[in-house]
Length: 186
Image (tube, rainbow, N blue to C red):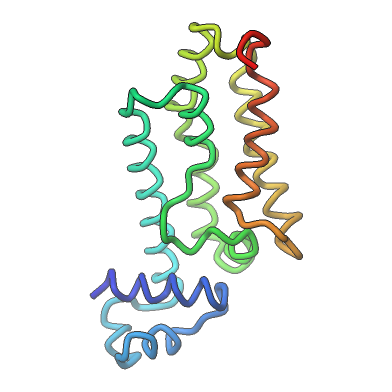
């Protein structure tokens, strides 16, 4: 039932942003709010569950991507840097900004995830540099630029973004990657 509630909340977030109510979620499922509260004590706990689930999904997708040797390194790096969990509520940049402003504890989890867990990206970059696909560059600076640009996207596009988070990430990563490819691989 917890997963059904979380899915209904994701649908509400897609429709209303984080301004959805517990009553909206219960109504979507045809259950009482009392029943919903038996599984989640608060809206904050429900949002927390969705955030944790989203991070777990992204980590699992990244692992799957890393194991797929049929994907060229440039494509693998692009996919890893633009990875978003499928069917999760945080595809809208405005929702990310709402999360940052309204749910600081849950935002800290997203923030921690964005600032750690870069081992697979480092591996792809080092492997690509060793193969001459990427020119030598400071990987840590690249990561800082990516994270900084992502925060800027969230701040700038939240007020009137015309792009989804996925579209914005794809364009941003495209800009970053064209700057790191070896001239021989352009």
